[in-house]
Length: 293
Image (tube, rainbow, N blue to C red; front, side, top):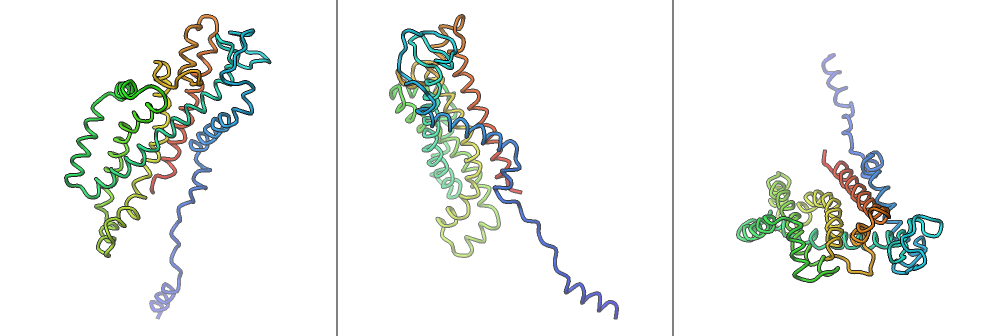
């Protein structure tokens, strides 16, 4: 009798609820790395977008009566050898470098994830050909290849876009291919295929959303790499061409006055470091938030 009662009680007892994963917003707000990176990145973006408002002077305007002047109420960060306001050039240079950094990553990200996902899922001759191209591109030192391509196709913004479009996609392709090759062996992919879904539907609706996360996280670091490359090209005279402001060209101009006017090179250098740290923190935080349990 007691056994029957116990069995009946067990039948009516509710099953314990499965713990649900916190939402993306909740995980983001509780991730200190992500929040620090988000605040720093937002600050940088806000400053460069508000450059026409808070810049005070034109980035190419000259004040020949105050050349190489130190920080003052008139020029917050001083002026360069041509009397151009360093604060204004810093803001407009950040706008240029960030714009180039983001736009130069868009095509490599989209094309690399697309071709890597297709190759990883379908395999065959297409996969072999694409991976041989990837191996060849990755065999060359990155900065040497970028400098050579920019020198070949032409200096300036268009040369930077073409150089990164030709080289940067290989990292995303290899990354997406590896994630796809792992995902296609899982049971839920086999169940989707066995359920009669087409390859295209399985690829875009089931595999791609689960493999693109790593590429999104890497894109934050990739923007930093592009900005550093743009600064390096600007330092070598192959990047953004004058009189347009650019952190790399500002560092180049300031190196001639390191003994007397150090702020000319220090301020754009600090801007590059701060931007790199903020985007790196943002990428690390995204990796923690998007990591599956």
